[in-house]
Length: 356
Image (tube, rainbow, N blue to C red; front, top):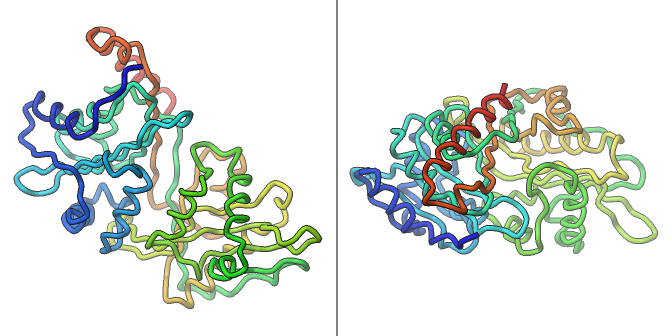
């Protein structure tokens, strides 16, 4: 496959070719306040809200594009109209792309942004139900629906108490205590084993792991693990990785403790350790002054995670959809416009069928 050009010139070319009166520039740290204001003021981006700290926005973009070269800010009339980020293509997983744009943005703008991110490599992105214009543009460019997710909230203002005492032989440690006891690398290995059979790129390299732990949203004191003591040394039996999150999916800003990952390795499953850690989390988060716990659930997870969370008091506030685009003959022959148009229409039809 031919190597793709850098993202910025692709965005500029697409905007120019379609006659969109917009300026595109590389994203820089000093752009963060304007981007945060745009995200907070755009209802359809409620699930992408960030705290008013540019470090969290930068950490989010670092997770998509660690090189720092695949991030573009698009401005219309001097104001931020979109942010696009694209990960370098990986060896196996589809490369991630992020398009932060108003759900009601003109089709000519969303088509330009989607076309700019498409390369010969497989690509994957996630949209919320309110990003209708973006979803249509993705369908026109050959993306199809592969997964649906539910964003869920649980109120912590009720009489939450710490859960039952852990079973004999288990200790519940915070992220700070895990670091003190030198168990963070063991936690990463446990995480990778726990999510090895899940959909999507869930496992983490050592570099990705430490970037996540060092991120400004990570909450060590509200990250919990059940640690088993054995002859071979401590082992992680279950864990909940938690971050600070601000979500406006309900129409108002909701500050929550967000469970990014709740993991139990296969040998410790079906012992109630996941609910045990969540109940402990709710009590500690309430004591810290937070009134909401949040998480995202894969609606097609074979372990029926969404049903478990509903039974524990979580309620859906928004759904999101993952879209995948695999290389097509149009990528190998870009001059064949008829083949490209046919491929896009065909994939959009499959997308509608799969969604239904």
